[in-house]
Length: 301
Image (cartoon, rainbow, N blue to C red; front, top):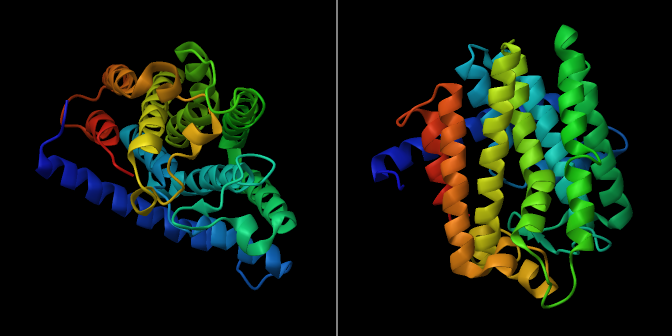
């Protein structure tokens, strides 16, 4: 299901506005670049302000608004979430992990600042995220629990470990179920946290939190499936990162498991799941939470 060009343009504009809002809040809530230790804070801001979709804060903001929350309530959560996401990218790019030289169209943090500073930069971002959530008052406990679960060994960290373990050279033997598990932990868990944190920030009911979490998880699975496809079909100028690297390294991707056409078919199935999850939120075709699914399915970056 593709969107009409006018609707796609509307969602592009909304994503751009959400990205600008996130950048303003990041600039306000991150340590200034001249603060000591200056080298770490320079690296931190280099990593954070190097571009990026800001999808996770956008989803958080979307769900918060859906349940009647305000941008002020969502801001600390959105910045904390983006700090965790950016830390994961800084560490994922390290030579001991994915060993990448390009991220968001620029040299990776360790290529510019060195490996030691890159590690410290990631550590600082992760720690700052939870310092921000400590400022959310009575919501703090729930927000910290959701983000910690999604970012830790039962979520993103665990997914990275499985991803590294499943790299077996040029022709890995993987199945779609194994790939789906990696996707769920490494990528979808944090997008699910974004949606649930948006519901928490809006003081949604427990059943609404569950629906939001399910929507984010389904959206994240679809998003990562498309990422696997773009690694094969995209180019560095469009993607802002090294294309073909997953395939060359023998990563456990959806394309490795199902082939390119099989991966495309699976991405469409995951998009259907995400639309059904949007409907469980109360969204219908024409609503942003619903149409965002098709927009992400059709993305080229």
